[in-house]
Length: 308
Image (cartoon, rainbow, N blue to C red; front, side):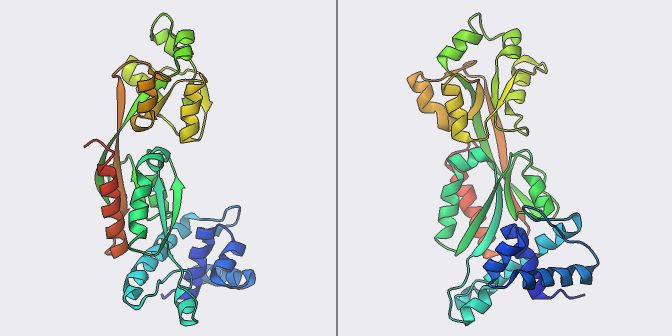
């Protein structure tokens, strides 16, 4: 069975843009035309492929097709590169009509701390070689590989070393984390020392419900399952500000708080008791120049920040 390329392009655009209206604008079509193409594709395959909502997401049946569509975009871009064209989102037709070709969309999952420290230079290096539009999905490193399985991204920074099916996994190095708090917080909650009882009561900051770094640190330190009060702060820099203002203690990348530790604005809960998180780069096993250059840029950027 062959899939109509126009239907597949519309399908990929809806998932990338998040809605039928946004996909229509990206493809220079009417929303009705996009809807008809999706309907035709679903009728041909006999499955509902898109879960309508805000945003629209792929159904389980649509996830493998989403991955297939993104792989085709990469291969098409590679084939058209010698001609100065980029095969994405109807870019071929646009170029033939005299308009500038569209950038190739790259969906990548990355954890917030990597994004705040070393990852952006890798994207900048890739952008110097390829006309790409990066679509970043910020996801906890313990969960980012799931986006690969779903077909929502083509590459991910992840803590999972085992390759997702159809992917290649490469070790990047370890990001060192340090448990920090303000001096005032330490005086208030740990005046008698950092004991198990004090740790069970002192509030800690977590990025979101998926953030397990504080729990891992407590297990490493105490060998117990402590459950202190938590503040959810879904911002890397907000996390640091929360510690500075005494809201709670939390695990922060050493690279982001070294200066604050040196100045005394922050202190370590337990000096030298740190947590290292091993990170890996997983991407589709696809012979694509863009993917090879992206991987090289990511490994180079990580090498300047992460411990080997």
